Image (cartoon, rainbow over all chains, first blue to last red; front, top):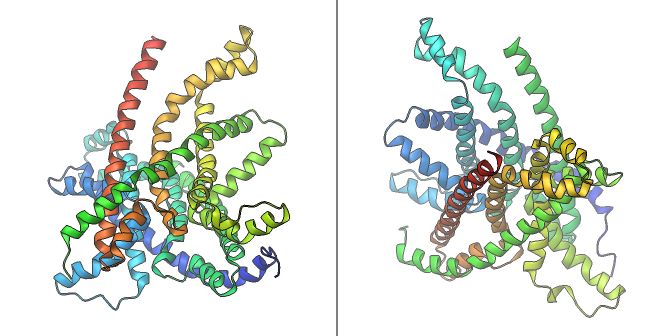
Length: 229
Length: 236
């Protein structure tokens, strides 16, 4: 019997794993886009206290924050087709990737709406009053005065949430997506050397996380410079 | 396909039965994380030689790796590597004898130590420098200063974040079902293996997680209010 744990296999596995990296990035990017748009809508609904919708948004956010990602993934995967079949849309033949992107998008929306809401409410009320007093309309006030200041506050947290999303995508393999994790699992299943494959995946996540963190600090600096100066 | 409400109740009952397992999976790593995480935070803030660097490397690496991967690496490490070690050291125990819940607890603890040490570091740095100087000036040693002055001020700051970390661990413990630990998730799923009503089982698991998270959130809010009152009374 050969060596049980052969660390040099990590370097054999790494190129194979990297070939599936684009799926992971695809999930993260599309989920972030969905999350940002839906998150802004949810945040505005809660800030302006639109009746009924505001309460629904609160429940939605509470559910997303209170249940594990993996449970949400399976609920969407098993539940969405039958819900949509009820209103006459058949999505049984959809690719699994769409389900994953929808789930992560919906989940990210809840977390991002909280970040956006906190950053908008943290802008001083005097700013709004001042801009009203110089004759700006409500929309002008929001887009010219409140939003840029809120963006500055929200950016670091959005970066953290983006990195969290990247780590959460490691669960997508449970419904059979072949991303970095899925590839690691299949390598493990065929070669019986799972631990090396998973270590390779860990290295990819680690490096990707550090690179993205650096990128976010740079973006933050740029945006700060643009808004403040 | 219709949603079978009665079966969901069956799954709910099964899931609640395994709630203690999930709570243990969250609580033990929390305690270990608080103890070791505080030590790591102290080592990093006071820049203890060499150890400081090692702790920093540990935190950066673990924070960059998803929990699932930590658990899976631990699991396959035990399955692939442990038997070889056991033969080498002439232990009687083999990997199949190890209860996997310990693997899950250790894996989650590794993760918890890293995240909680960051919380504690934030807490430590939030304590004013003047507090250290004042306690040194009345002749306290470094340990005394930490134990009597800094840590009591640090914990109220850290409590809200520790509670959210507990919620994160509780939710994170759900991935332990991937290494076949029978927690809330698996408890609900086992009932569904016979009739394939997986949606109902997952909804049942979601309800259990949601309710417990809401309870923890409420408890954390009450604890926060209590601590706030307490610190006001002392300070004023």
